Image (cartoon, rainbow, N blue to C red):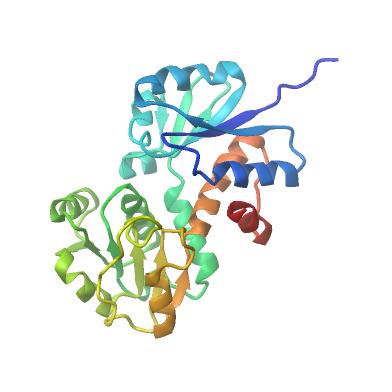
Length: 277
């Protein structure tokens, strides 16, 4: 009797010790009784290609990719999805049986699923979205919101030129506001998204004036440490529907787990608890 190979997956980044992904995937593997493992791997940029190419031979079926390797892995992959190309980064690699490495980006999917779960009454066509930040996370959020049918997106970033690059990449449904004018974006926004690290433990505070926020707006922060940032606490006081950032991390993990281990996992209270352990 030949025993089946135990499928391996993991997350590659540097640093990686802080990642919650092993807790989440480990919880799902245990919950669904799947013989498999999910391993955090701290890999230096110089070793990235060599490591990725050796993983399938060791029994790996795929990996998640995080900072600082999300752009670099796209050069290594044989196939890259349209959405990963549009976002300019990949967070999920699938090692196919034919030997090809398939790169995808599930961050936008995770963002939208988290939004739908946390703010079920939000309608994409309800009005403009205001986005703070212009990095990789912002690109994933913009791609998903345009796809969902949001009519207009306001962007503000501390470095204006990065925000302008988004307009040239994503088109004229985007409008740039200077960082000092970021508070003005909120007046008409049906959705407000912080994609910056401001407000995170150990980072500076987000100092954008929030007095323009309407209680009808939905406010979400991609920061999940702390779970309730000052942005979300203030928005809650105003009466807004608020959505924390942990759900995006959980939902973006779903497509990868399904492709690697053959089971579509559910994001529920136990999953959140596992991530927060």
